Length: 269
Image 1 (cartoon, rainbow, N blue to C red):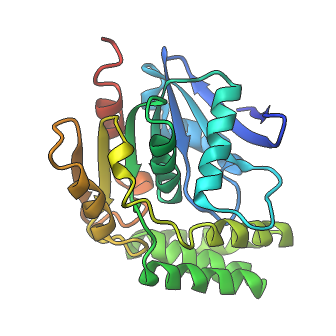
Image 2: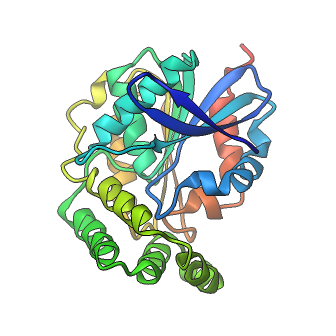
């Protein structure tokens, strides 16, 4: 699996591409301690079931981050990358912070998005959400990569899954660089002040909101509040898992099939 780079003329951004479908699916991953590009092969394998219907693009954040960044700026960067690659229109799947970016993209470019899935995401960051993010940022500032990986994993995964991965997380933390910690801080702080609740009316595409009742990062209420806004629309839906945690997009065995069924429902029309 090759990592490719798009150059918009203003910034560069890494991405991976796989699949052979006629429609385009853009996946926007959530906040992570290290780049998802390091797990490119695993990501492609995880979404293999979508590759008959879609050609899939998974975008990283821009390579060189500004000193201050916001979710809206991340979304605009991704819009620029997608336009540079001439991918419009697209289906979108955003997980966690990636879902926040997806909302921003669908708000700014409503004709840009055919269908959208929001996984364990939110339309705004509350004080409780921010407190958790600040605890992670504190570990990163202290250079405690092991503590950060463990705190991050414990928040994302159900207890049994977290215990299974505890040793691997500790081992992986040994590979984290000071630059990766600085990057994590910038990306985590980008969520502060995020709030698009008064702009959701600008979203025109069908939306599937997938959350988890035991989400310990953003909570089930965050998904419910997004879905509540779209409840009068028959092309929008909500599904809540129970027992798979915030990272249900990684842990729920039928998650990718839910994505495929919703996103590909009119792809052959």
